[in-house]
Length: 152
Image 1 (cartoon, rainbow, N blue to C red):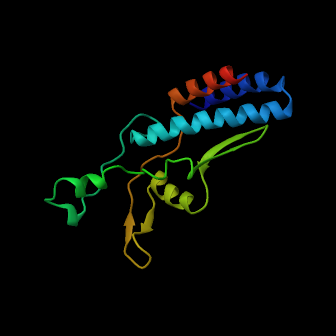
Image 2: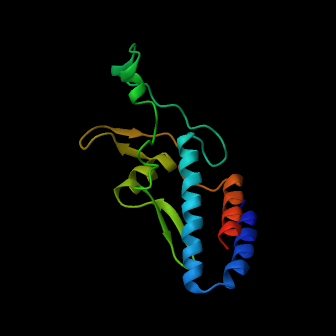
């Protein structure tokens, strides 16, 4: 996986070295937006970078035995966290960053690595299951390559 990333970096570096800094920054921004879009789609599909499904949520006691609208309302995990408001893009002439910043980064970090966190401010500690939100998959490498070719 890292060999593929180094090969992509070398290939893109040669391609981007021919451009002016302002052009490089603009292209990096467009590529980062395409990468953010693919990450958000993968999070929406509730899959890790390796294609495995996220572990199922723990059943909540108040929803046991209930059907219909109340239960469906809370079905999708990470509905808001995958929006552009929270999944941010930072692009310069040299690098691209797609990730969570601020308080959302803390929530994402707990989910990404399966850490222990308080359920509420003074509530009990709970160990969350590992649900990798961000990461590069094989399809992301293809998205990066195609995006660079399209925007250069």
